[in-house]
Length: 214
Ligand SMILES: [Zn+2]
Image (cartoon, helix red, strand yellow):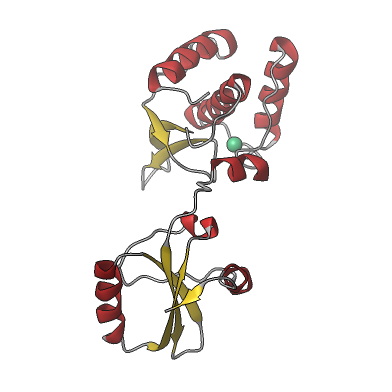
């Protein structure tokens, strides 16, 4: 399932009453498209006192998860929220206090909350857009020796805009262009903006092996 804000708010109230004695004030729920986390409890911190405030419960709807896992993710973030809110000092992000609350909830209520925020590699893979889409890949070699990559939409307009920009960038030594529909490149931001990324180049070159040089 991919939960809605209403669903998460309902679960929050339910768990607040079941597991936290209704002591947690409600917080804004924010849906996220992140594939690097399933949930997060974020906050701001007062500069002088270090007090935490402006809590938000963020839940990623990027992955289609079993309902129980969505629920356990909400509970996991609520444990963080409880610790932040009460100002308890834990030994680490998922330290002794976190683990003890987690163990109590799991044992008493048959939940399967874990200390992980991250989707498994398999879940991430499922969430990735695997449809082949044409991209132009620019391999940009800088004068300092580094080589970066830029994914550009495969339109003449975007390519022209990028080429015009890159010609004016003094730090660029050389640029090579490739045309490919390999879904490997779907994950990068695609635009004509002059912004390059420095990923694992060996993997990139592997995926460019079948690409057409431009
Ligand atoms: Zn956590």
